[in-house]
Each structure stands twice: as C-alpha cells, then as structure tokens.
Image 1 (cartoon, rainbow over the protein chains, first blue to last red):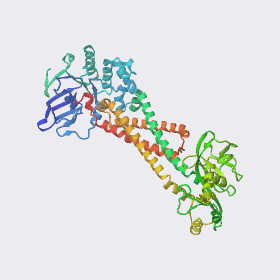
Image 2: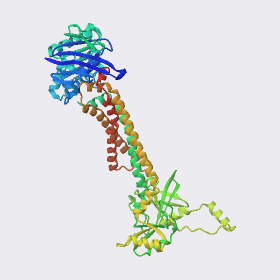
Image 3: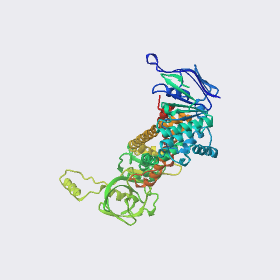
Image 4: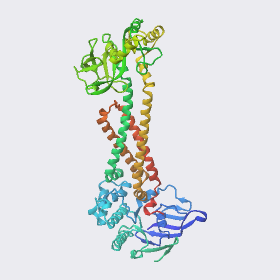
Length: 229
Length: 384
C-alpha cells in the first residue's frame, strides 16, 4: 500500500538572478514497510526534500500524495487539510540531534505525541512503556534526557517517533551523532520497525556504511534524484 | 500534559529566584499603593477625626491645614451667636519638634476648648480626655508615651492622661492634644533671651508692646438640628468676614492642595513600577522562550498545535506573575507596620493591582509568544 507519492516535485529558493533550484523533478513512491535511504553530499537538497516530504516546506511545483490524499499540487496546499494534524497523527520524526524535549523525562517525551492526539490515561502510559521496552530502555524511563547517553537518547527519540503508530517515519541523519556500532544498532532498529510495524521509513544520511539492507537507496545530486537499486 | 510546569520544575532554582525578584518589585508596587492611600489618610485624618459641621477660617484662606489661617480667639463668641449655630469652639493646630525622652520628636499639637468639647480626641483607647484647663495632654502612641508620663514643653510639664490613635498629622507625625491656653502658651512661649531683648527694645522705643497670644487658627462649628448649613456659612462669611468650609470641603482643599503633588507623584511611581515589572516579566519570559527554541521547533514539527505552544508560554508567564504577586502580598502584609509612614492596604487596591498584574502577565507573554510564533519547525532538522 502506497504511503507517499511525490511527482515532479521542485523547490526554488529566491527569485530572479538569485533563484536557486534546490529540488528539480523529483519522483518518489514509498509503500508501507519500505525502508528508503536518501543519500547525498551537503547542499544536495536532502534536508529540503525531507522538509517537503514532511509537509513543512511548500514545494514550488509538483504533487504530493500522502496516505491516498492529495496534499499538494501545483496550485499549493490542498484546501481543508490540517497539515499539523497529519504530522501528529500519521508521521514520526527522528532527528540527528535526538531533539528530545529537555524538561521532560524519557517517559514523558514518548507520551507527548500521544497527548497531542488526545490519548491519555492508562492505555497511553502502557503504550509508552511498551515502546521503551521495545527500545530496551524502559529502565531509564524516568530519566531526563541530559542524564542519558547519546545512544539512549536516540532510542527514546525513536520510541517517540513510533508512539502514534505512524504510517511514515522520516529520519534526518539519525546516526550522525553516534559512533559506528551504535549507529548500526539504530539502523537495525529502523529496519525492524519498517518490517514489524509496517511503517514506511525514509532515512536521510550521508553515510553509505549505514544503508546496508535498505529496500531503496536514492542519491540526491544538485537537487535531482537517482535511484541506485 | 502540563509542559510549563515540567519546564519550571527543571529550572525551579531560577524560577524561584525570578519570583522573589519580581515579587519584591510587586511588594514595592503594593507599598506604593499603601503609601498613596496612607498619604491621603494621614492628610485627612485630623479633619475626619475632628469633623465639625463647619470650619471657620481667616477670610480667603484655605486653612487651617492646607494653608495658614490666623484669627483672634474672641471671634468664636461672635460665631457662636450666629443663628443656627449650636456650638462653636476655638481650634489651634501647629507642628513642633521637641525633646521627648532622649529623642527629638516631630509632632503636631492640637489645642481646643476642653470644656466646649469641639476639636478634641473622640476615641481614647487608654486613660481619659483632658479634664483640667492646664498641664494635661492626650498623646498618640507613636510618641511611645504611657499614661502618667510627664512631658516638658516650654516652661511647664504636662501629664499624659489619655492615649488616642485616631489621627496623625499630614506628615504622618503623631498628634498631641492640649487645652487651648496650654497650646497657645507652648506656641508663643519666648525664651529668656528673647524676653530680655524684647524688654530692651521696648525701653529704647524700638518696638511696641505686642504680646497677644490669644490667636487661633480656626473656629469649629456644630449646627443646631435642622439648621441650614449653607445659610449659616453665608451668614458667617457676609457678616463676620470669614471663610467657611464643610468637613468635606476641608478635605477637598487638602486633596487638591497640599496632598495633590505627592498623590500625583505616588501615582506616577505606581505606573512606572508596574511598567518596569511588566517589562522585566516580558524579558524573563522572552529568555525562557529563547531557551526553548529547539524544543518548540520539535513540538511544531511533530504536529503540536499553536494552542499547545501558546499554553506553554502563557502559563509560564502567568505562573510567574501570580506567584510573584502572592509573594508580594505576603511580604507587604508582614512588613507594612515597619514603614515610618502609614501604609494603608485596601483590599480593592490589591484586587485592582492583581488585575493589572494579571493583564501585565498576559502582555508580557506576547513578546515570548511572538517569538515562539516565528520559530520554524524546520529548525528541528538543523534549518534550511
């Protein structure tokens, strides 16, 4: 089942002589359970691509269909759609710097997205503990992020991304701040999530050592996408 | 999930320090409110404690408190004879600084006809009123005198026979009640050197004999039941050539005259302090928000509605403002007795200040909200 379809997507920054074409004619289709890697050097448009896919940045042209619903087409965002609601209900995010909310404990960080969609009480708390257990960090549930190691923080961040059972997980350089063994462990987790949860996972990375076992690997170069396999 | 509380719990040291800081500022605001009210209270205290139907003073003068007024004592007999007047009494009021015990004390003396009854202390909480024509006094507890204490004033010594605290003078200094002749004597008493000089000047023909001490500042009038106050006042003004004021008008003279500039000054201080408080809270909330830029960006990215962000910023602002106000309320109620001038705390003032502070807190959060509003979710990804 297709989760995300991008057709002819382009994004320009600036205007006139200063115009920069950050993305050009991007086509991408991601189905449930797919594990997709976006590779590319700095300035290739990876982050712009991620921002467009996560419905944060409005593309200049093209079409975005998410979960069977047209979200963007050439005239702009489709009317009557609450983009933030789509993000909080159907997407999960993992960041390079983990980006846990520093004043919330690990448990509260994972609970936060559930709270946003109105899931409260025992059921929500149980779900949080299941996720922390799944990430093998349940014993650190009541620790503030500052008291967790980088790897532990990233596992909490992944648990948070999974909290609302998302259809699409977008990961921005999730291993960049980790050493190689920990980075590989995180990638293994993402593969496991894609297969077991049937979530589509798009990982933006510049580290080719980390993409072993991915279903699709795309290279972004000067804003254009090439599929490797 | 109450994000504001979780954040403040993590930074509770700084939050408490901020509450104490802003709370002290609000304490000054409440003290200023109390001082403002106290200034009015002190300025009107003697007038309201005396409260005759009419104050008769020197023609075209706003005396005896807002402006000097002097008149010969015997005129009160003429006033007493005016139709509609039930009772009239001479009244003298002046400020002195004298040695009481080991300290030099500033206080005001009220002299009145102790047998006529007008102008004396109405409520005596210890002892009794003055019953003799001479050498008795009723004092305010601020002078730290006890019943039976002897106080030398001029050539004579006066015994404290009663204590009253219903009034202080417009400077907040205590009052001392004396009989009229005693008060006149204390006021016009000359020292030995001055008497010798006066005699020498008289002997050389350089001065005329002028030693009339039967001077008063006002005549207090009580009207007969059913008498028309305006008619009595007009009669006194037209036929005796004095000015007359009701107690309310006498109060207005003080409010528009002697108290006006201080009242305006205190009002401006209050406005200034409130503005400073709001600016400080704004900056604190702005700093709190600045520190959470990345967290807010993450919240926006994972789909938190604006309501969640607004609640976070505004709740912190209001928690800070309300906690600081409560701190101030406790502090001022614990300390207002120690201020040298009267700090008159009125619940309605506290309610109004709370409303202003509450609105100020909302206003203060606007800067933080404006900043939070501008934060792009893309920042969570490291920016574009």
